[in-house]
Image (cartoon, rainbow, N blue to C red; front, top):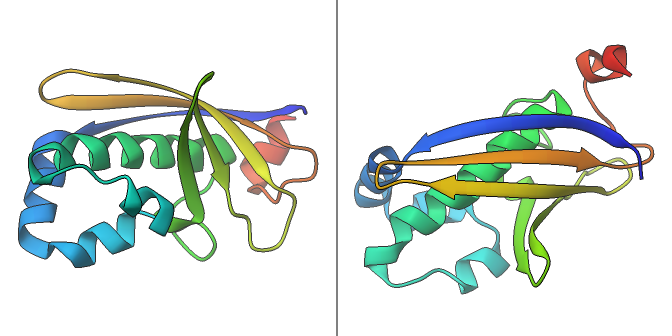
Length: 132
């Protein structure tokens, strides 16, 4: 599959921790798909887990040249840990599937993710089309 784009995002863990504290389950349901919620660790591990997933999803949106909006909500992306590393799929409502390879690194305060988007006929923004 051809490369569509590359995106990078940095998340401050304390911001995610505050959102979990203030919004609880509502925030978790906005950020994560049911399969991701099923893997959610105990409360002490949730800020890192959610930060990691959000950084990957935001990097994926940037790789596609998209922002949060119709069809590109956080729940439109599913992060999967597999034996070969982290992958992510965009559950594109009107086009071909987009598969991502994701690299995630973290410190005590931040999580950074890089996402490489691959696909054949993905619906992407005009900015990405111009770069092709």
